[in-house]
Image (tube, rainbow, N blue to C red):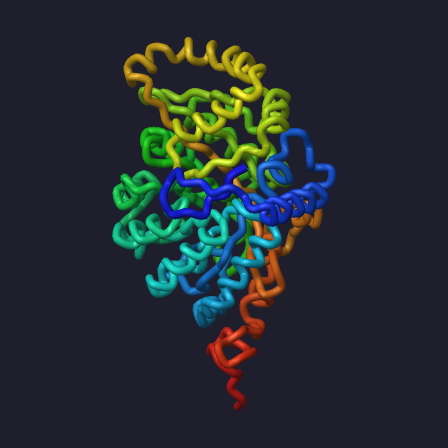
Length: 431
C-alpha cells in the first residue's frame, strides 16, 4: 500500500516498515473495537482504522447556527497552541496509522492566522495523514485554498444550509448561489470539494432538489454529506421530528438521484450512524455502478491493501485499481461481467459525453442527541475528535464539550513544561 506524504497530486511514497507495522496494529485495534459490526463489508479495520478524525484548531466561529455542536462557552475559548495541535496530529497518526483522514475543523478553522493553518496542513501531510479543511467558507478565499492545496490539502468541505441564518437567503435553492461561488473558488485545484448540509424540518423537503443540484455539478462536487439534526451543543432547535431519520433521508436522496441506491452494500462503522452510496453521472444522467453486498465484500477482501489519494482524478483512481486487478485476473472477468450491462444501458450517454463520467458520493451522518447516547454506537464510532485525553467519539465529545475544551492543557514550550488555560491562554485569574 502507498502512503501519501507529498504535496503534489499523484506523488506516492512507499510505507516504511515501521509505518506498515503501526498501521496493521491500528487496523487490528479497529477490528476488535468493531466487534459484531466487523462484517465482511465493513470498511473499518480493512481500508482504514477510522473513518476520520477531527482536529479542532479553534472553538471560535463567525456564524451562529440554530443547530450547532459548539458549547455556549466556545467563543471565549482561546486557540490551542500550535505545538499542542502538532502533538495531537502525531497521536492521531500513532492511534490510527498513516493514511488517516484528518478534518482541520473548529469552530471555523479559517479564523486562525493563515500561516498557522497552512503549517498544520503541511505538518499533517508530512506525517502521512490526509488533511481536509472543514469550513463555512466565508473566509476560505481562492488564495487560501491555493496555499493549502500546495501544502497537501486533500479536500475542502463547505458547510452551507439554512440553519446558518445567512442574511438574504430564504431557502436551500437560493443558497445554491453561495455553493456555486465556493465551487468557483476551488475550481481547478487538486482537491475534492465536499458540501455538508444539516437536515432539519425546515429543509427536509428540499433534500431531493439539493441532490439534483449536486449531481448537476458532479464534475466539481465529489461528495455531499447530509447531517441529521441532533439536540446537542448550543443549538436552539432541539431534537428532530420523527420524519427525519436515516431511512427517510436515504429515501429523499433516492428520489433526487432517481435511483434505488444500495445503501447497505458498504458499511462504515455502526450501521445506525452512517450510510454511504456513490453515484456516477454521464451526460447529466445518474447511474448506480455499485455491485451487490456479497460481491463488494469479496472485492474488499482482495483489495483492502490498495490505497489511493483523493486528489487524483476519478480516472486516476480507477486506474490504480485496474493495475491491481491485473495481478488477480479473475477480477478482470468479474468486473467486466458487472460493468458491461451498465455500460450498455449508458451507451447513448457515454457517446454524447464522449466517454466522460463523474462520481459524487452521498453520505449520511446520523448524530446522536447529547442526552441519548447509545454506548454500542459510541464504541463502534467511525468519527472521532482529538482531545487532550486522546481520541473521543464525536457524539460523546459534543455531549460533554466543556469537559474537553475548558480543561487546562499541559504543553511543552522552549522553556520546558507549561500549562495552557483555555479561557485566557494563561494561568487562571484569582479574584
